Length: 149
Image (tube, rainbow, N blue to C red; front, side):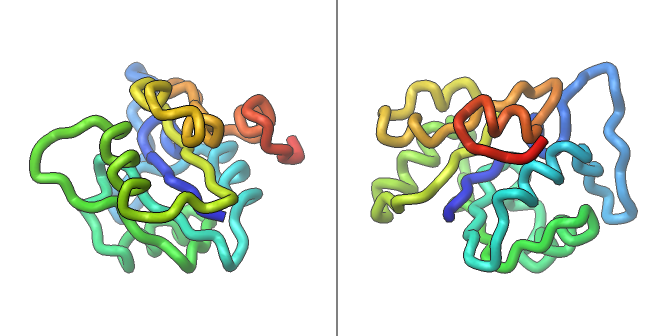
């Protein structure tokens, strides 16, 4: 499986009234439910592409450490191409698909509403999260991916 993964509003809830808990690496703690939900999708063959705006802040090795400190081991981790100018997530993901064949089994997990503008062959694989809550097993189930709750 291939997973395009955002962080803010997915792994870290975006409630403006709460300051996220930072771990010693200076990055916010992932919510327990988001960790549980993502873990249910991971296997040694899972390829995760970080689509987060934070993707250029850390090397792949540093990202792997960030995930491991939060209980998630991701062997095949990469990022979308760096951007020099601010751009829409939808356009960044479309560009990736313009350069790569569309895999049979993939998910786009994000809270960016611009992704509703993706073509249906991509939007059909979208799991839209609530930025206030983030990813949960229930949100995966809601979008058609069976996860034990």
